[in-house]
Each structure stands twice: as structure tokens, then as C-alpha cells.
Image (cartoon, rainbow, N blue to C red; front, side):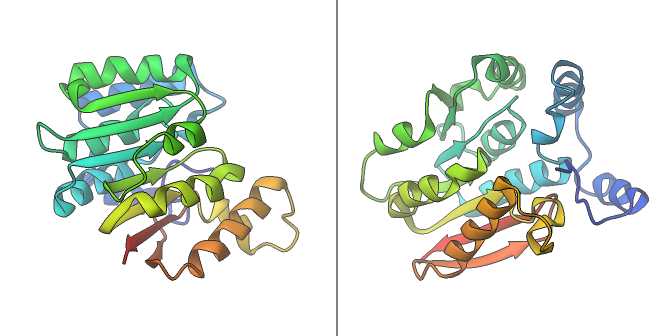
Length: 219
């Protein structure tokens, strides 16, 4: 999957990033290290314009408590943490010590490590252990695609009214509209998108940002 807004030509994308999403030194170094350390998985990292969007949205919403499902090397968590107040909290759910060890270093370097709590283990278990009442202001889902319905089911009841859930990779490199694409991930994303579109608990919009980003507001 693309770690830029894939339907944009490279020159337009570069212009877009230069006029509002230009990575600073911390983000640039994190992107570079991820490319070196995880060359086969680099597309798991969000796009720079997506990172900037997460920071601005977190600030706009006045988020104090956020949850992330799928952290990888930490760029999305860094972006959300930057948008939190000094006493805000982001809980990150991931299973990889290898990937998140990179993330920890960059959170520390950026001065946001005290806002981030990393919980290693299956995300479904982590979410189920959270308080059942609505308490989450913002959630970001970017993990195994077959697990999306489970994460959705656990998160929606825990979102505050007006809280926002963001879901990444909902266009899956355009494969969601290609009849010939019948791999497991594509079918999982199609089914999940249909589930969200039919969920009366949220107001939903799908944005053509990076590999497709669904934004849902809890009613």
C-alpha cells in the first residue's frame, strides 16, 4: 500500500506536502530509519500528510485520551501525541517489540514519551480490558485487516459522544473496486467498509487521503 496519497501524481503530492505537511527532522529521521530497518514493510508507515492531519485533528477535537491499534515504528502515535495537551494520554496497542522499539526512541527524542503508553499484546485483549463506559476521545485503527471488525466492535461503545474513530487503508490501493481482487485482505476491507457504512451509531465520511482514511463521529 502507498505511504502517500496514492492517486496523486508525484509532483502534486510533493507540492501538497511542502505546503502544510513538510516533515521536521524527527519525522524525517523516523521515516528514513523505517525505510532502512524495514524495507519490506515501509508501506505500513502512514504518509506525511496523514501524520500532519492526525496532529491537527487531535488538536481541533481537544483530545485528552486516545487509543491507537497498530503502532509499527511509531509515526502515527507521534503525530497524535503531538496534538495532545501535556497531560493527555495515548494508549498504543501492538504486538511487536521489534517495531515499537524504534517508536519508543523517537517518542523520547520528540519529548512526547510521557504521553504515550505502549501495551504489547493482542489488541483485542487490550481493548477488552479497558473500561466499558464511553471514555475515548479519538481512536486510530491501522493494524491487521481481518481484525478491523473486532477492533471496531470494542472501540465504538467506548467512544465518548462526539468522539472520532479513524481507520486507515480503507481503499486498499484501489483494490476495493476491482472485481478481480479477491485476496483475503481486500475482501476483509470491503466487508469492513460495508459494516461501517451501515452502522447507525456513527456519522461516517471516507477521505481519499493516503490509502483511504475513514473518519467516523460517534453520535
